[in-house]
Image 1 (tube, helix red, strand yellow):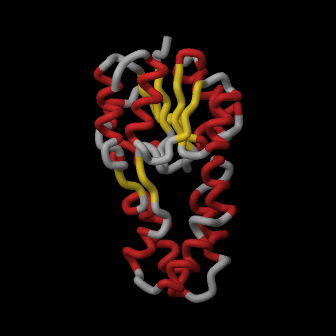
Image 2: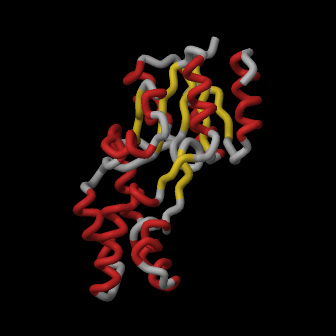
Length: 206
């Protein structure tokens, strides 16, 4: 029997666009590309998701990829404010999550995310009270699709994988979840398809 439904954050519960914060500070396409590559598409960004280094040390390294003071200033501003602009609710997903919660299921967010997210997440989600817990990679030192990422979440929230579903937008993460004992679904933006999957797995019509 399914008791828990675990959602990924980016491109599932929340949509994400890495350049929105940069576009808030400049409209120069070349500048936007350069800062995005230095910050959001950098090795340091992945290191933040792993929780291995501080934001301060990662930003310092990111800035070495840029040339001018203007570029570095805009990069620092974009890094400081990315969670305010880059993440926004996926339309319609909040209603699905709330409906699931109303029917008595436990809901968790399982996401690769930096040390900033535990403090920021409640300001980003439309209905944070619908979630029973948040599990971020930087808190545990493992990232999806590593099996250990999921196992730490099972231990933390006393979740039985055989009683749980996992929804992610990336096939490799869904495969990692299956390797950890979860039934998983790759979300491609189709809300009706997601509801059909949940209905099939739970025996309830959503």
